[in-house]
Amino acid sequence: MKHWECYECEYQHNGETPPPHCPVCGADGDQFIETNPSELDQYDKKLLNLLQWSFPVVERPFANLGAELGLDEAVIIGRVKRMKSSAIRQISAIFDSRSLGYKSTLVAMKFDPDRVDAGAAVINRHPGVSHNYRRNHAFNLWFTLTLHRSQSLESEVDRLKSESGAEKSLLLPTLRLFKIGVKLDVTGEQDAARQEEGPIISGIRSAQDLTRDEIAAVRVLQRDMPIVERPFQALAAKYGIPQDVLFAYAADFQKRGIMRRFSAVLRHRNAGFSANAMGVWIVPEEKLEDVGSLIARYASVSHCYQRPSYPPDWPYNLFSMVHGRTTGDCETVLGEISKKTGIENFTMLYSTKEYKKVRVKYFPDGFNPSN
Image (cartoon, rainbow, N blue to C red; front, side):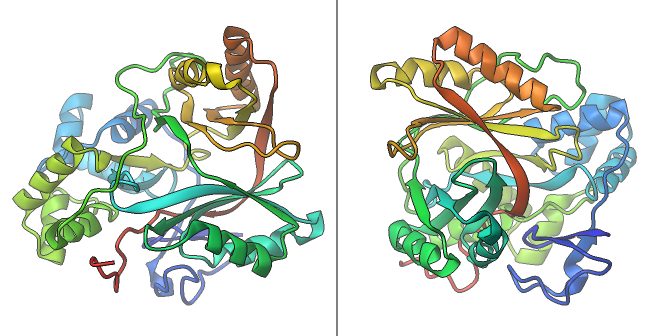
């Protein structure tokens, strides 16, 4: 069985051949690439660390990366091209959805176990669903839904619940954001429970009004980076926004908090991180700030949020996503957090099946900026 991924939206397909058209974005079958795990040497691992931590927004970024690793630009380009079919999912701008005028929520649904796959197929058809997983809990389907602010999350979730045949659903929007973003140590040289170095992205941002030209720049910068000597020049030639203008927009977006970073997003399993656990906690209101801030300091934690609780079905109000090479790594981190905080009421949810994992595409074709 071969594994295929749509170059445009990252929809994944298993089969001997790719589908004739992508069921998510409509791209032709020739836009699918075959993905395969590959062996990574130490230079690959160091390069992956650099790519996911900060991609140089300069004319020849791969030359900059090569200078840091002591390798020629052509060698770096060759390694990145090879890893695009294995460990690297995309290289692009990572935007803050709320700053762009979007809103999102985590949704948990409960299905009869024999109906989960069929329900997931219905959920996957929604273009605003970017991640969809089966997890080991009575609420067995978990997905994220992102919509423009002109649309209603509640109405869409109700519609999806009805159409998918779910027994129950929980709307779990972010109430407080303690952390988003992760820097995985692909080299394996650092401890799983190490503390974060550098600033942590936290806090919920407000929507900013973007001009038509800024929206056009977002559309370009969110696209997967071509792996050539001058990738921004290639984007400029294809989409009609000069390279120096793209650089100026990227710097301005980052300064305003609209763009979190420009970096690679990895296929975690192919990069050696085969486990992830969603640690969910019951935290007294007066301790939420301290506990959330402490959890955010762990480098292996990619997300830490306060979300609504729904006792007795769902009493948990603090969520933390932990990544590790093994389930033991995840359990070590969550166990240490429990000891340090004194919070013993927590549980761990593991993904047992991935149904969908794609990028959110902001301002798609046909979007009206006046909405």
